[in-house]
Image 1 (cartoon, rainbow, N blue to C red):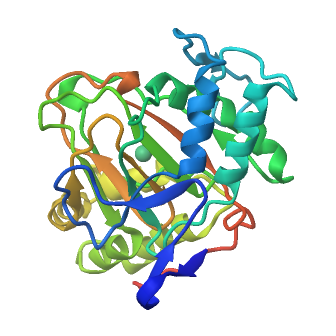
Image 2: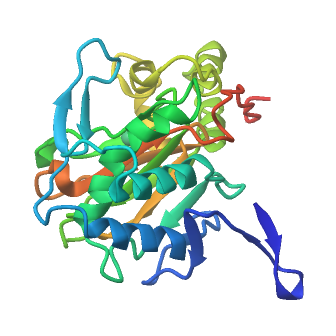
Length: 303
Ligand SMILES: [Fe+2]
């Protein structure tokens, strides 16, 4: 929602988040704005803490017959009408009503400030999917673990996750203090521009990549990674080189993160000197009221 404030300046206001200045000198990435929890969100998170055991850890669950079988769930069943349920329900409404800024991405900071324990944020993201799923007949949400990986394979080149859900929120938690394992970003439009400039890539393949992003009904993640990076493709080396040159990077600390439209933005991870552990971050993918209809997005870079 856009609201006018003094002097004719417009601010993008969402109930879940509130605009803020970054808590450190931040790398500007295409004018990306920084947000923190809104006062309302902060109140709910602080109130939740009284109802969560100090050592509460989300359950790591395997769901049979599910497209994304591994997930985290709340460590205790949330009974409707209890105070904890009410707080998660109110926050699930904020997540469902979230509208991203027009650029489709927001950086987040101070997520663990003011007495908000990381465990409460992890609990929330684990508890949200079951409540978000009830918001709309097509609603689904996932809190998916990241794979532990050793340093030689710790880099994750630019990609989109391409879940059927459009929104991805990542909260960094235990991030090594050393300056490695940075986060990288590139718009999907810039990706398509790069592909159009690689002589070895047939136009038909580049057009197919565009479909991966525009078609909201299929998860094309495996095909995307294959077509961009598999060494059997004669274009792969040059695509990697050009994407590395085009990407933007920043280094998030614990309590920082981002929320983005996964169809508009690619993200990645630079090599990390130590092992990537599952508690490096927590994340949730979901659809808000503005993305639930799965309207095919239109990307213009290939004309
Ligand atoms: Fe990813």
